[in-house]
Each structure stands twice: as C-alpha cells, then as structure tokens.
Image (cartoon, rainbow, N blue to C red; front, side, top):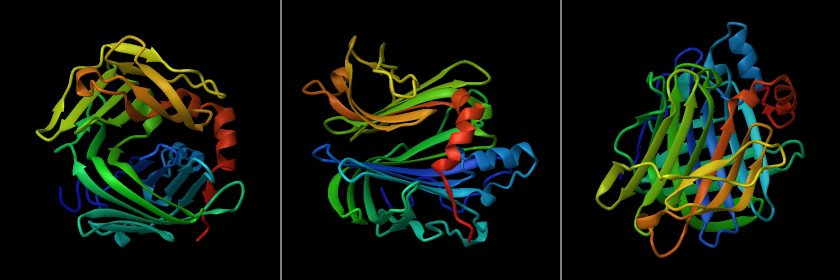
Length: 317
C-alpha cells in the first residue's frame, strides 16, 4: 500500500459536517499505547456544538488534535484550533504545531500538544507503515451520510516521544471517518474494535443510527484482501466503567471476550484493550483488540457538556 492511503487531507468538509483521521498503536508487549486524532469539525467539542446550534456551521473554525499516551507515564491532550482550509495539501496537514503527512510510504505524525488540566506535553513522532487496508469506504448508516474507511487497518508502527520520554514499536491502525451532519444527529451510540489475527485484522463497527435500523459492519482483512464477514454471533457485555457507559462486543464463542485494561473512561465514551476469541480467524490464541464505546445521548446531556471544557484546551492563536 502506497503513500496517501485513503482520503487526502484537503478533502472538502460541508458546513456542519466533520472529518477525522485516526491513528492508534499498541506496543508489542501490550504495556503502552497511543491514540492520535486530527479533526475538522471537532465532533466532541461543546464549542462546536454550540456554534452549530446558533447557525455558525463552519467546521474549520473548530479543528483539533487529540493525543493520548497510555500506560506508565500516560498523558492526554485535546487542543481545539481554527484552521485555514487552504493550508492543507493532499498528503500533509499542519494544525498548529502538530502535523500529519504521508512521507516515503509511511504515515508520519509530528505531535506537540499541551495536556489539560496539568500543562504537561505530548511531543514527538509516530510513524506507521501500512500493510493491509480496505479498498473503499463503508457507510455507517442506511442513508449514506456517515462513512468509515479503514485505509491502513493493519500496520507496523514506531513511537518516539520526547515528552513523555517513551519509545516503542507495535501494531498500528489508521482510519478516516467523515459525515455531512453532526455526529450526535446521526447516531445514538456505537461500538468499534480492531484486532490483529495471525496474518490479518478483524474489525467490528456496530452503530445505532437515529434513523433507520442498526448497522453491523464486520471486516476481515488478510493476504487475499478485504471482505465483509458475517457478524460474530455472540454478544458479550464487558465490565462497567466508573461513568457507567455500557461497553459490549461480539465474539465467535459465548463469553469469548474479556476486558484487559481500560485506557480511557469518560462520561460518554470509553476505550479499552480486550481479548477476543475470533474463532477460525485465529484458532491458536485470542487476539488483542482495541475497543471503543460511544454514547451520544450521554454526550448531549447538559452535565456532560459542562464537564467537557475542562478536558479541551482552546488555542487562541
């Protein structure tokens, strides 16, 4: 897979819409992890929600970088900024002091973000070399207003951070999501996971749209390419979180999913590591999956909207 897998960084984003470019890395020993997201139209920003509700629907007034480091010395940064869409190129986008770009066949992230509420930093570089990816995007709702493209669903990755001082290599993942309406207008909730099999990757994306029936997307990627797969048949409820946001997944066998660690626990979403029995996809051992659950009914509640600004920094520049 060559440079520029998936959508270019300078794609149009409609008024009131959004686009994001997501990367995660889990170290080979499972002790460390990193997630980074570059947003146009910061879908989880109370400021962007207020702006839309008042008729100010320019997504480029509300861009953001979210950078999270998990494990010992973990950190969390989320900075919202205005951006000039003309500064984007097809293969590179600098948003404040951080940058995402394709270079020599690798996706390279340069991160320099201030954490909140403690003003520490996430500063360093992430490189991701794609191995397998879906050839085209998939719709996440029956109306075709929201889309997901796991363009580098399996990758090798290298993390080199100066702050915190951390180096590791591991399994990487990159996808893109975009839509032409607010996320909370399109969905009540979703769960998503991705995990490596012996020679591929297994992904699940289950959404509950506001309109139309629930949508289940299961993709199995291997050396022969990407193919939709039957939904794993057994729903599994995972242990609850401090904020009480339900998290569940699906497994090939009854009870075949186990929580390894909670990476993030917030009032409306959580991110975790889960051991998942994928059945024939990997019969020798359960696979380690990154799992996410999002509750957008929770996101819109006034008490959640009140709390979120304490975790989101607005760059005045």
